[in-house]
Length: 262
Image 1 (tube, helix red, strand yellow):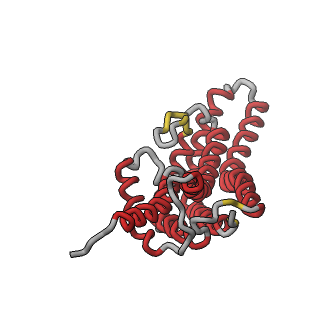
Image 2: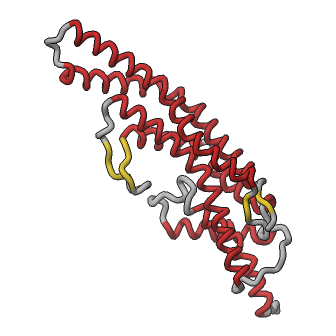
């Protein structure tokens, strides 16, 4: 009969806690995994399953007492690392939401907002449409599996006893803020330019015929032009969407390679 001692059981439980903490951190911040529509029990079950698979193949690390101050801080650090990995992908999703915001404001639909239970905030309609398209591409191209793969690989680039970012890692995190605006502006520029030309044409038309009601004809025209341009542009947005998501995966690997031993 196979006998398991208390010490062996405690060793297995302790080795299981470190990956579980990092995986739960990812699931609390990464797009799709952290959405409120993703059931909490399914989220925890998936984290447990991945932890069971990862724990036996983790690289060797110093034995840490989980009930000591250093052990508790290590658990917290593992959770922060997981949040950091998920936050990187969240930034690229936020850039697409900014694209929708810029298009909505140019169309005059900035008032068309509703409460989004996924983000628990007011979201504009165009942003929600583009976000749904992005999530479908995220799943269709199996990039959600690459996020999990990057998390698993982080246990080799960032072992349990290496928990702090160096200067280069902080710079990479700071540069991600600029990507939100650059990606959002680049993707929305064709539609915003078309709407700008439409508004200039309406201004010239109103100047030539002052009796025309600009507010009566301007809003339907700009909204119609915006929707037509959006319909034309969405198929051409697929490659940039996938590229940005792929860049997010690469950024995760760059950041996780810039942790330093404490």
